[in-house]
Length: 348
Image (cartoon, rainbow, N blue to C red; front, side, top):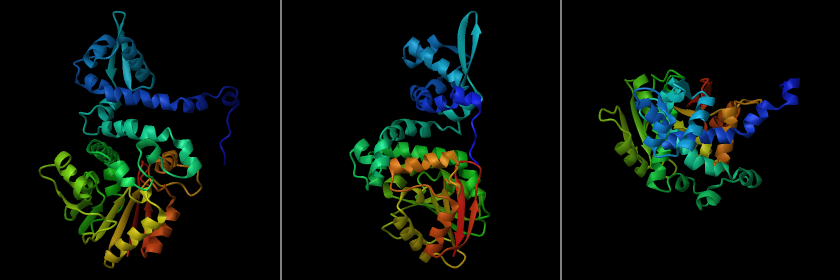
């Protein structure tokens, strides 16, 4: 059933205006992260004035004051008047998710959205007209060169890896425990990037061995910038499309199927199927659409993101099930976590 707007919403479109100005709201958060507002406030002994913040960050007083007020307006900062002067402090949400020093920081994800995804989205009309990603128009790279666009420089690769790491800070535990995977002794996370999701798997199933399999340059960067000294996760280099894949009882494909055409995804799933012994399986981790096409909104946005960035799309459960069945897998199970990412488990 379609939602009917109230007469007041028809008389004055408050919600529509919020949507239209949404890009400006994003830029408020992007700018504050890039400038270091949340790191400064987290480390401060108490609330700070706009003048203090501007001096510490090397920004204009006028611009800083307006930015801080906007952050108060969206409930990310608090403000109070002391002796006639305004002083600003962080909320718990800002300290937990926006400051770089927090264990749950989304700072890397936000900067990636600001510096890489935002420029691509400015070319959305062309993507919709042509049905192709905007890597060529935005970065000067052919549409089919997905990896080259993501890893076009070491700096860009590290930004992407930081974004991926942030994703599993939020969703990793829910994905690792969406199904009981204790029966799989060897787990290989194909395209596992920094190993953040693999570490959640290793924590949830300490008796299983967990390996991240990714491109050589990604593995090298993961070990250098993201691995822990006492890491319970092993790393192995290779290309799961063109090279050999290590043996496993369970293969994890997290945020992989969404990037590619159905033809390429089917070829990969069939390759994995032939590596599986009876009882072996594959775990897909994706942002799933509803069958009725009414959401979730984040999945719909993510599907548009795949349009401007990759060759893929987001799908509802029935399409994942069909694809897995075509590859030979059966007993497909779906788990909606209630968060951003969902899980699909299928066995041979």
